[in-house]
Length: 229
Image (cartoon, rainbow, N blue to C red; front, side, top):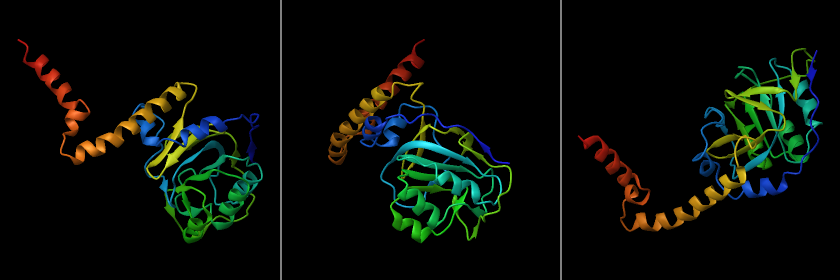
């Protein structure tokens, strides 16, 4: 038996997603203490930005049926997120799954597991993240045990359908917009990136990074406190 959870109504996130696409995930990561997906799940094709809402699949067995059913439920901007529950041998995504997701308007695919057809995946233009590749694939078995649209584990981070994922070649973040002022974080990140343009020039002219970022001043303050009798 497959567990099927109801999906929430579609929300209009176009403005937020457009703003996120202007910054690097790592620029937001300067201000976050959690939400980073395991570095073992990495971009396997070139990715500039990936931002969208998760559509989750828990697939513990080598059965392709759950993913194929999830493809029919994809909405524009969804990211198909698959928890293979520790199976890193059998690929659940290949060229046809990726093409179906792309034509359904998906913003990306993230697999805590492996994929196949890597050369073909690189031609589709869809961000693909996984732990690696395999030549063994799932088959249409119709076995019980799968779960669609519930909460899964992605590289040790709990992901629910509807969660915002934001990634590039460096990795993927789960953004908890209920716990932070995301618009303020974006403004901070944009300001940091503008400052870095100037810093590149100043570093090239021989200035000290420790002076630019205040590290030397902080270190002097720590030494001053430590030296106080």
